[in-house]
Length: 336
Ligand code: NAD
Ligand code: TDX
Image 1 (cartoon, rainbow, N blue to C red):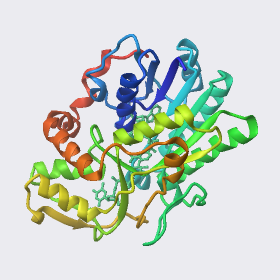
Image 2 (image 1 turned 90 degrees about the vertical axis):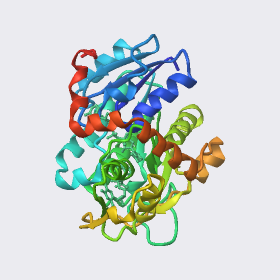
Image 3 (image 1 turned 45 degrees about the vertical axis):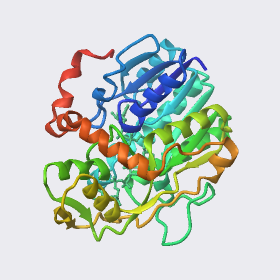
Image 4 (image 1 turned 30 degrees about the vertical axis):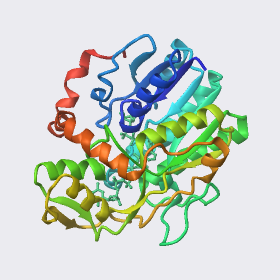
């Protein structure tokens, strides 16, 4: 592979992936194609800047002409598709943009990639497509999809469109479904960075319901290494679950963060629950581990320690998001 198109590379996981990929695959040209919605932030890649191997192009995955033009100009031979609306609460307030970006945008990419004879298409999806678990069991790749939020439903639809293209046209695609990520550059609307930001300012930490919902947490860099393994050695038409075997109740994460930040538990504020809130997610990652030899590089304790340190050290990064300043400066920084 010589030229990789990364969609959504200015977001949380995409920017971690771009940085990881440039470091570990010198000589491969990486084009970051991102619309820069509220979740896209070029601060995330400021240290990289443009160089021989990296180009940023502002564009919308829903625009067929723009997508085809960027694939043609940069001779794309592989795609890693992160671009999406990603926040469950926003999908509950308004689902239309989730359908437009996650469903229609993915179909536009599939069509363009087929037209350009792209050799590999990696569709980055989520464990949320499987719905909610009770206290027992884990999601395997053969668990039926049963999405419960508009976000999860739009991601499940996009997965099915990718798999349908594999079946109908022998489209060379793979779907990955990862559990909750955490780490540097996560937008502070998501649980861990939001709680850190609130705690730093001694503001109440809003815990939904009783805080007993369970998520299975994976350090973002470990998600990136898993995606790399799937790109290199995964089989077309397959689904690979990715997860770190780190189940944790929300309230336990919040308490852990408060301890690390030396803030009192009296800051915890139990608020109205998220409508339709999934109780528990847990990933069985034995396929990606056994077949592709992937394993996480850090434990949850190490990952959360590094994450808290990162947010403490990069306070200006999240404060620029909180103030809205992150949207102002990059007007002349990109090619359109
Ligand atoms: P994010 O919200 O931080 O980033 C999304 C990026 O996509 C942003 O840079 C945004 O500008 C861009 N984007 C949105 N609409 C676009 C469009 N129409 N055209 C081009 N770019 C557009 O999301 P994230 O948390 O980094 O998640 C990335 C992907 O990984 C998503 O597909 C998500 O479903 C999936 N995923 C996320 C997690 C998680 O825990 N965050 C877990 C599993 C899977
Ligand atoms: O303020 C909050 N209080 C709270 O209790 C927020 C923002 C969240 N929560 C709870 C809801 C969830 O049980 O914390 C848990 C995690 O919430 P989010 O960070 O919003 O993540 P989640 O809904 O689990 O979805 C995430 O993981 C899967 C990502 O946002 C998705 O993009 C990914 O697909």
